[in-house]
Image (cartoon, helix red, strand yellow):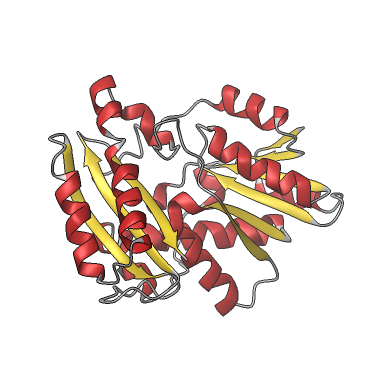
Amino acid sequence: MQVVETTAGMRKLRDGLAEPVGLVPTMGYLHEGHLSLVKQARSENPSVVASIFVNPTQFGPKEDFESYPRDTERDLAMLESAGTDVVFMPSARDMYPEPYHTWVEVDTITQRLEGASRPTHFRGVTTVCTKLFNIIKPDKAYFGQKDAQQAIVINRMVTDLNMNLKVVTCPTLREDDGLAMSSRNTYLNPEERKAAAILYQSLCLAQQLWAEGEKDAERIRQEIRTLIQKQPLANIDYISIADNETLEELDEIRLPALVSLAVKIGKPRLLDNIVLE
């Protein structure tokens, strides 16, 4: 496995990689969910590149950029064991040389859900992904379903800008109690970690209600809210049942529908979702 720390070095190395190339963009502090993306990329491509870059432009001014967990040595060992060929680890100065003035933005779908709570978040995501795609030139890029809106936004950007790659969305990996694997789970203390299981329980309730014939999206939202509010450590940011492409909120469920939520358990803010289809 080769580790590259500059854009110039990555471009030079890219020319020698066997085609097609699969890319797994990450912010590091890896878990089995990330490795599942690497393993899928490995199964579909002769060459696999992973990036590790804690992207400052997708963090708001009061968010956790400085405290975001980092463990590069551990990450590299995990990526090597999963079969990664190249790890691209640029500096912020390399990715955003001063003065920096250029941004990539996707309208409408970035203004809902996470975008409503974090107004500058997706501008940072789409800009850094565009830069990674330009530098690495992957044939496929792999993202997790846990960050469903991110995958939808990136797919929209790739389609709208005629980028020559395919976005692959991979299933969410979960802990034994259903909690979606996330780097931010490390922020949870033992009591909060136990309480966090309520997120997946509420999504399972939505799945059950729909399977039993409930089509009223607002009724399902209310049932989810009632269940989560029984957990005293939980503070709901949003509960959404939306079209899985436009992210418009639904009154009556039509398929496929994205059931997603953001909930604070203590201080950590956790995301999860399922797709009804």
